[in-house]
Length: 367
Image (spheres, one colour):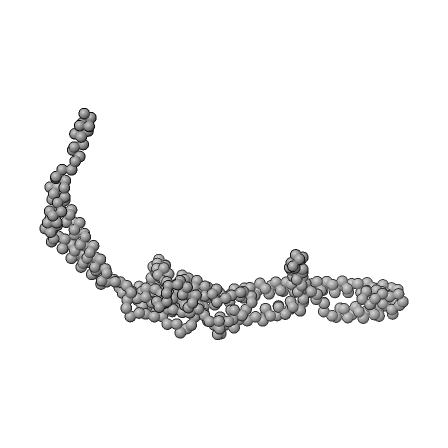
């Protein structure tokens, strides 16, 4: 009995013949709406073609350069103040190529901070332009299509590509060339500043060590002078002029030497330069774990100080980029793909037309 009542309650949920979709009828109704579908499709196609034709052509401006040769960076590699290798120098160059301040300088040098009418850009416009160009600039290992994709082309050829898309190839080529020159010069200036800074630090350290040696030697000399002066005073007070029996070794200050010898030694000591002695600059552990002092002689210290003072980087032949690098502008534009834009706009417009037609059919059916 309960099952019969439940069936009666659920019988109204069964689909009726009115809920079935007749695909044939739907297709016929869509065909009847061919005019609106065609009109929307044609409008979308015309709009897509117009947009495709209005978009400016964009060319990929590219420069490919190799890492500098050992000869080009020899002045940086020959100095011993800061350990440098070729890859480190290239890394500093790549950092500067992505510097927004250098990009701004390059744009400023090539007069690229004006609009199409020649009016100078405002500060917000300048910032936006710099930001957009920095984001569009691509720096990557140069691609070689004839090689298998081993992921190690950079290690084999060590060539770098810097490129960007632009609708104005001439101006882009100009500021890209300026950016390369600025990045090269900035990298060399940074390296020189680091080396000169380390040179100053080392000179200060050696100067302080030399000053400590000189002060110690002066103090020892002064102490010896005082000892001779005291011995001479005693010898004079005892009226000892010549050495007498019982005098000690010549290396010991003794009034028994007599005033004549003591006066001669005192005069010679006052006229001579203080004698510099070896200095301990640190300690190292030997194979047994014992601390062994590292001794620096005054002659070695003076030699290092003179070598640092005479250090002079000759950068006349130094360079980081081959100045024969050409910035290439292709004959064919990379973007936009006008055919693809037009076809995509037409297809989307066709789907929109079908959707509008279905809505119209649904409205008529509801009425």
